[in-house]
Image 1 (cartoon, rainbow, N blue to C red):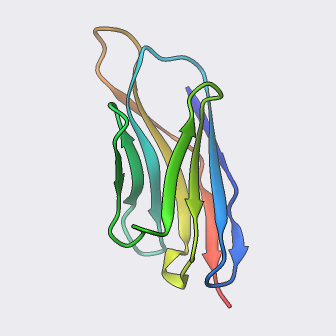
Image 2: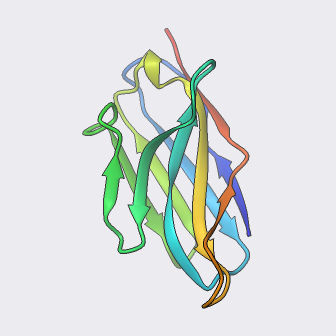
Length: 120
């Protein structure tokens, strides 16, 4: 399984970006998927995610501004980011937790990261 993230860039405060994460490969089941971010000097943190049942979860700092969505048929995960703030500046990573057989434990696959910079 491989994940390819894209869509980052340099934007001004208040502007929008859409991140995409294309998954390739096969799996038996998905236990969860989401977006994380890591700013310089900070730990990687959850931004938004889907549970195995499809429910969504957002970090408090992005609620109402970011939306996670997916196209399961195309194996693409999206993150729509609106009203961006300088504090959203970070490298954004997509993540997929999947099981590769009925009896195997879940494993995590990470994308390579895409830089989002919000600055005037």
